[in-house]
Image (cartoon, rainbow over all chains, first blue to last red; front, side, top):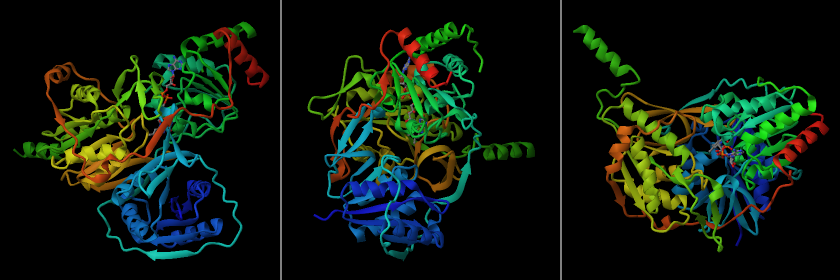
Length: 328
Length: 282
Ligand SMILES: Cc1cc2nc3c(=O)[nH]c(=O)nc-3n(C[C@H](O)[C@H](O)[C@H](O)COP(=O)(O)OP(=O)(O)OC[C@H]3O[C@@H](n4cnc5c(N)ncnc54)[C@H](O)[C@@H]3O)c2cc1C
């Protein structure tokens, strides 16, 4: 059977998101034979992006245009794609697992009455691999029907397009969609001046495993050992109000890459990892030997934060002869 | 007289009592029960299911706690509203429904699934849709994701099955005075929010941090203790509904390349400082 793939290209501010190219490599890994990109948007920007896709990948592109598609919206994407997909008849419709991707992918699957497998991280023995339970469990998935919608975890595949052959074709398809019931007001940037992550050589980050707000002091005292340090946090810690959202690191927070990242009581959820994985050295301290963070860490310490950090501080002051004070 | 009129007008326009003259919202919150900690679970020998042990403590999925709180906040804005909480699963998930009642939901529904196996999002959503279809909900809220299966699907599929408008990752919502539309801010990557208005009825999947979930009050706990939980026997809405694409479970293979520090806690502390010193970090 010929395996045909549709890749839904996502874009923002007139630029194709890198996750779109990651999907291209994902599909090639699966041995995709017939690949078609589908991109939705309004003229003129979408035409330029469609051409870029065709050139950089040598793949044919369907470019669906409507003035109502200037910005992403779920119902519009679902309706247009439902129509297009029934003409291209793919086995797999591949979508990046971004905030827009997972917004409409299950809608599209349900509208087409086919299964949807989300947040795919790997392919092993022709099965899709995805995380469960914060990365503690790996599930193997195989679509229960001949065709399916797949979403792919950002960063799981390389995003570079190394293609240099002839470009693919671009088919422009004006689509007639009713204005719809969704009103799009645009975007709002939350004014989050971060806490000096750029200048920090060392980031010490707190996870829920620190146990209580009081123990933020321990994190601060550990950070104070380093001359240029900053305090980071997981979303969980910010949700609890232990630290402000300015400290949040991860896919919906700050992206950092310090020389040293110390993860304290952090499980290592993929949404957190994607914001700190490019740190040069990662030290993880966690009571759970099987925590996912240990798969990313350079040095792994299975200890309780509450007893281990005081030990480190004590040992430090013993060595240096200076008592460690509690401020940062 | 004029003052009273003006006061009334003000009340109607103010956010808190926007629905002063409405009959209220009919709201459904979908709650899932998840194990509190992943270190009390294992995979069955045939790789088909998650096994829980005697130490497994179950709790509400945290994202659903934020969804429940948001529903209760809407109810406070629109007097006369009612909040139902529904959960799909084996007998044990009644605890999750009970917890929702204790927190302030008015009515609880348990959609019974006999076995404690993985249930796919499509099946879950179909079962909820089978129940919700005839109940005339104005607003359905779910968490953005279940902490155990991490699929981010049930809400969206449910919306599609019920022909509700849908938005995910919601960090702010406001229902219009005429109750016909809902303004929503969705959190996307990089600290940006997408702002849209949807037609009601709508389904929102709620992101953590949108509010501060309340603790159960004593009076609600007392009320919930004796309250009946409605049992709905599964009525899958269509043939694909027993769909299952997850075919095997296991542990991650790639152990990572990290080095585990060994010895006593003090040994590890010394070794860590030694490493940091060598890297000229301290
Ligand atoms: C769309 C979306 C976006 C998200 N964006 C982000 C994001 O940008 N950033 C982010 O961080 N998260 C994000 N999340 C949430 C993410 O999925 C995780 O829920 C979160 O990162 C978990 O935080 P945690 O590691 O602090 O808590 P948990 O997962 O609860 O982990 C706590 C860890 O502490 C350990 N522990 C417990 N006690 C101790 C102790 N005494 N000493 C040492 N260790 C201990 C435990 O073993 C466990 O591993 C997002 C989720 C979604 C759905």
